[in-house]
Every structure is written in C-alpha cells, then in structure tokens.
Length: 484
Picture 1 (cartoon, one colour):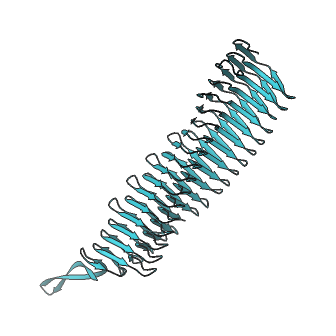
Picture 2 (cartoon, one colour; picture 1 turned 90 degrees about the horizontal axis):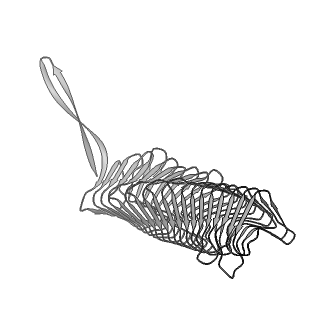
Picture 3 (cartoon, one colour; picture 1 turned 90 degrees about the vertical axis):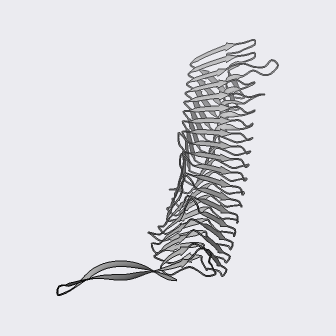
C-alpha cells in the first residue's frame, strides 16, 4: 500500500523575514505494480492494478473499494463463486483496460451498484466468464455500465451485459459474445434501458440478442448488429406491458424458431425505416406479436425458412407494416393474424416460396392491404390474401400473382372484400386456373374494385358450397376457357 502525496504551498512572515512553506497532504491508494502478483482483494482508497490479481475464495473480488476509483490494466482472475473481477459501489468508478477472468458461478466480470457508480470496459479491455450465471458486466440500482472492448461468456444463463433499474451501453467498438444456452447478449430488467451500437452474437439455444422485461426498453442503433445461431434464439425480445424493443440496425437469426423480434404479453416492438431483419431457419418469423402485443415494421424483413412468416400476430395482437417484407420459404405468409388479431400492410409484400399467402387471417382475425402484394413461386402458390374460420380480409391496394393456381383472395367460412386491384397473370396448361376471388364453405366475396385475369381456365370470381360472390366493380378475363 502506498500514499499519494498532494503538495500545497504557503508562507510564514516573521517580522521582515518571509519563509516559504511546503505542506503535504495524503490520499490513500492501493496499488499492485507491474510484474507483481497478489492473491487477495485490492482495496482501501483508490485502487490501481498494473500486475496480476488472483483470488480463490467465494465472494472475494479482484478489486473492491466502495466510494473510490478502481483501475486495472493488468490481469484479474477470480475462481470462487460470486467473486467479481471489479466491483464499483457507493458512487465508485471501475475502469478496465486489461483482462478479467472469472470461473466460478455467479461471478461477474464487472459490477456497478448504486446511483453514481459506473463500470467501464475500455477498448483494450477483455472480459471472460466461465461459470453459470456469470455475466460479463452488471449495473444495478441506478448504476451504469459501458463496454468499449470485448466480452465473452461461456457458462449457461450468462449474459453479456445485465441492467436492473439501471442503464447499459455496448458502444460502437464493443463486442459481446455468448456461447451457452439461455445466455442473452444484453438484458434490461425492472425499468432499465440497454443500448447497442456494437456487435452482439449468441451461439446457444434460447439465447436472445437483447431482452427487455419489467417495463424496460432495448435499442439496437444504426451501427448495431445482432446475430444468433441457436434454435429459439430470437434477435430482440420485449416481455410484458411497458416493455419496448427498437431496431435501427441489423438483426440476423439462423436457428429454427428463432424470430427476428418478439413482443409478448402487452409489449411493443418496432423495426424502424433503416432497420433490417433476416431469418434463415424454419418457423423463424421476422416479427412476432404474442398476446395483446404490438409489432410495427417500417424497415426490411426477409425470411428464408419453411413456415417462416414475415410478421405474425396472435392472441389479440396487432402487426402493422409500411416497409418491405420478402418471404422465400414454402408454406408461409408475408403477414399472418390468428386468434382475434389484426394485420395491416401499406408497404410491399413479396412471396417467393411454394404454397404461400401474402396475408392470412384466421380464427376471427382481420387483414387489410393498402399496399402491394406480389406472388411468385417456382412451382405453385396459394395467393394474395386469405380469410379463414370467421375472419375478414380487405384489399384496398394491389395484388399481383405470377404463379400457377394462385388466387388473388380466398375465403373459407369468412368474408373477403376487394376495393382495389387484383391481377392474375398466367396459368400452366393442364392445371386448374387462377382465380381473382374465391368463396368456399359458407363464405362471401365482394368485388368493388377491379379484377383482371389472364391464362387458360382462369376465373374472375368463384363461389362454392353455400357461398356467394357479388360483383359491383369490373372483371376482365383473357384466356381459353376463362370465366368472369
């Protein structure tokens, strides 16, 4: 332990004699010099580590000195449980430019607790945690944590960064990597905020890029990238009323059932105009609103897997898109609403896969299009809009189909209305023709707009099984055996 001398000056006057005086005051500092290795916690006053610190008992941290400045450009290793690398408390600041390793369970790389406390991992800093529940950086009770460097966690349920009633930042130079199941990149809990401008990657199953719970908010900024590879590993998740997720950067998932963004139980998610979402696994939807939740897209969504919807709302939820949605997988939908939900498109939906719908409403749901829906497929496709099982679909925009057997709008025990334009472009010889609108099994189809069909055996409107087709607009058909 050493003391830092603080010099101050004064004068002493004795008659005509002036004597300069030098006073020294001292502030305590605990320093581990370069080349030195200690096996205990560095504490007492300001703390500086330039060497190596190794602690092994449980609850014994590398550096901990409440109310003081903590700095390390050396190495810190803790092997006990609940033994943190650096712990800032009582308005302390902890700054790391070296390497921090923790191997015990519940052992954080850096912890800041209480208002006025902060933890900073600089660009040169590296944090590695190996135990279960061992997060890279944690901020609690009004503290803040900043990552400019590298964080890697390898234990189960070990987050890159965690905030509870606090704020955490992954800066543009920051990198967060988690390797195990349930290990999210950044987590905001209980009225917290998390901001990402750097890179986040997760490799485990059920490992989200960012998670907000308890009326918290997560933000992926323009320079931020989120990548997940495990099954069920969503890019961004907001849970519960009052929680929000915002994406202005890039979100990519490659695992099955790994959504780009998910809102559940009253939460809200937004993919902004500059935001991009790409999913590659099966049943990996772009954006999902579950149980009274809300999802909005004004950016770009691309899905590649089988049964991977661009946007999916169920359980009384709402999905709204003014951006671009492209789905390449088979048996999918650009937008899907189930169980009393709503889907609205004023942007662009392009379907490239076999057997897919542009918009699909089922189970007492509603779908509305004021934008553009285009249907392409290498073999065959279902069509532009569908309403099934007591649902309603309305087109006020444009639906174009370029696939075999494709239908502009279809109803099964439901109601469909066209106030816009439906165009079916061709059909392959030997197959049933495309139809502008079809109503089946007690359904109703109403055309107030324009229906244009081209191709052999094409139909303008079709009604079957106690259904009705009412035309108050315009129908034109071109092709052999075509019907109005």
